[in-house]
Length: 185
Image 1 (cartoon, helix red, strand yellow):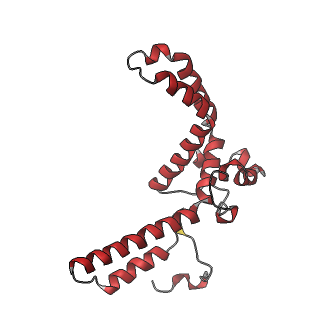
Image 2 (cartoon, rainbow, N blue to C red):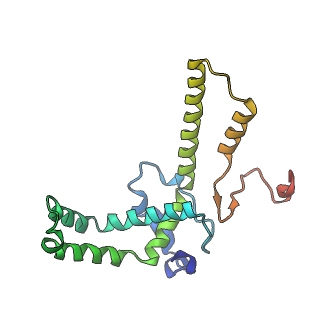
Image 3 (cartoon, helix red, strand yellow):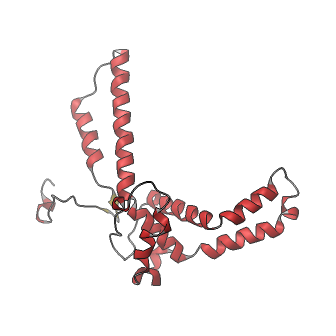
């Protein structure tokens, strides 16, 4: 859906309004943590990144249809075989709401939201990996196991500092320039 080209919400100023609107209110972080879209043209993402965008998209649609979903769940509670018969009207309303909100524009907004939270995800991933390395070091110390190769630990720490790859190209850090791109290859 998003790979077909920019929608009307992307080409107008409507995209800027969604970043400051209800999408970021549920987060405890300030708006300074959100990054802009790298490009208005759809960037190719890896399969796992597209899956993350779909998760954001599905969560947004479920949030918009929360009342209908709750009504259907209340009706379906403690029922098995009779759900399709007893809750047909609520099921139809829930499915209609989700179909109405599952639009390409909503998918584009979910994609923008995913790009905006890149920095937060990178920090969380780095925190988890550092915690894992610390636990491994403690485990080796506790059981008297030999230390890991310092070069291997250094390589893992360098890997943590790398930017996430988006569109097949990693984001350049502030210190890198285009002229130094070919060095070291």
